[in-house]
Amino acid sequence: MKAVFVLFDSLCRTAMSCYSKTHVHTPNFARFAQRAVTFDSHFVGSLPCMPARRDLHTGRLNFLHRSWGPLEPYDNSFPEMLRDANIHSHLVTDHMHYFEDGGATYHGRFRTWDFIRGQEYDPWKAMVQPPLERLREKYDAKHYDFAKSWKRLQNAVNREYMIEEKDFCLPRCFESGFDFLDTNRTADDWFMLLECFDPHEPFHAPDRFKDRYRTGWNGGILDWPHYEKVTDSAEEIAEIRANYAALMSACDHYFGRLLDYFDKHDMWKDTALILSTDHGFLLAEHDWWGKNLMPYYTEISHIPLIVHHPAHAAKAGQRRSVVTQTMDLMPTILDVFGIPAPAETLGRSVLPLIENEKPIRDIAIFGMFGGPIGATDGRYTYYLYPGDLYAPGLHEYTLMPTHLHSLFSASEMRTAVLREPFDFTKGMPVLRIDATKDARRIPVHDGKLFDPGVGTTLYDIVADPKQLKPFRDEEIERRFRAGIAHEMRAHDAPAELYARYGLVPKRAA
Image 1 (cartoon, rainbow, N blue to C red):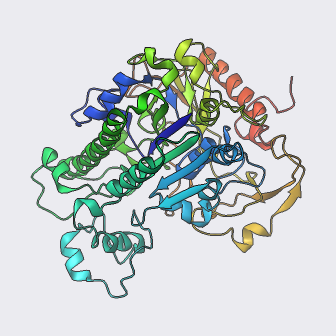
Image 2 (cartoon, rainbow, N blue to C red):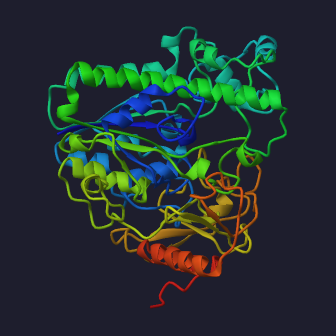
Image 3 (cartoon, rainbow, N blue to C red):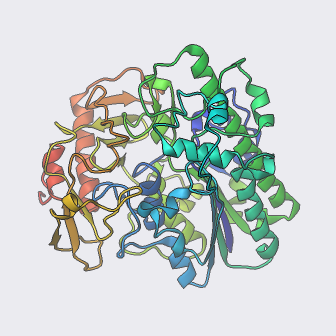
């Protein structure tokens, strides 16, 4: 057996014609949906980028125990399990977070990997004296204040070397993927994760994709919104959204080239193909840009999943409404190769759901470490807030004390104590470290704190898919709270979380 998993970052289902009425041109995603099975109630687990990938590797939620961080010594990792079963696992990625402190253990689990340089603030090209005046003329200071953000300056420097379309990271990722397929498509027993940072911000697409979405904007480049409340003019909002749409269309185009490759080489008969993302993105919906700081609205948490498996080709074009989430992809990929999931895995393979759409969970829970807990049953979505998002008593549990791009500070580490193992740490004790208010962790983002929104609330995402009408209902909330507590117990969540969220204690019957 062989399999390709295409993982985009920040791929909004609302901008995919196979999921939503949209002006964004995405014919190839729709083309794939006709060739595969589309999951309509697929949700995130742990947020954002690297926590989502830890769920993907391990088949279980990790946001209950720690914030953004590497794979832990006790974690199962599906590409490593494939490698141990003599299945060649290969990674193609331009996702620079794999090569920062907080993500440095992921790529090494693959048998081989290729890192495509230059995305976002990847420290790729060294320019000691960049042409600041010329760059300031080119980029809008609202998104590119080079005096305040070295990351945005680094991105502008990187883009100086992306002249032709072939120089962009997206086509280079796909070319690397095609190189792997050219060499290995006739071999058996391999898996490729083709992971593209696009359409994550900055929304930098080749000009030909922007032509469809011209807004008449005459200012500087405006394609990297800060995570904040919307204060932009209608013209600025339109331009930012147009740049995202252009990048979505670019992603669709290159994904279409992969579909062409499958067609040309008749790979549908012996190769599985999976398409998904880690999370979505707010493009001024709910008066917000981005993620990490606001409630996990469906634009962020309700994500695409489309699956082709040769054994289920007769189901092509069908849809499934059963609730699935990111942690289900790890056992799914193992299932593709006939490998049983380890005992610590709490996700469930979605392959049986293609033949028999039977619910695999009552609710799915999701969120960020320390933030509200989201939960959904496919009809309602519930957001459960603690009384104080930044109250003391929250701890990180880890043997890998790193944040996004820094080590834990000395003040954090002075709070560390070694505590007994959790049921999934394979007998390893772990460090318990105070989650201090000033720690460099999400949901603290660039010095901004998580917005409480309307607090604990419900939405009917069938009747109110845009989540414009929050409401409260005691009976529904009681059911969700019981479901959240059940999932926390299944994940051996730390005892202090039950009091934090006002739930039935961990050891209660």
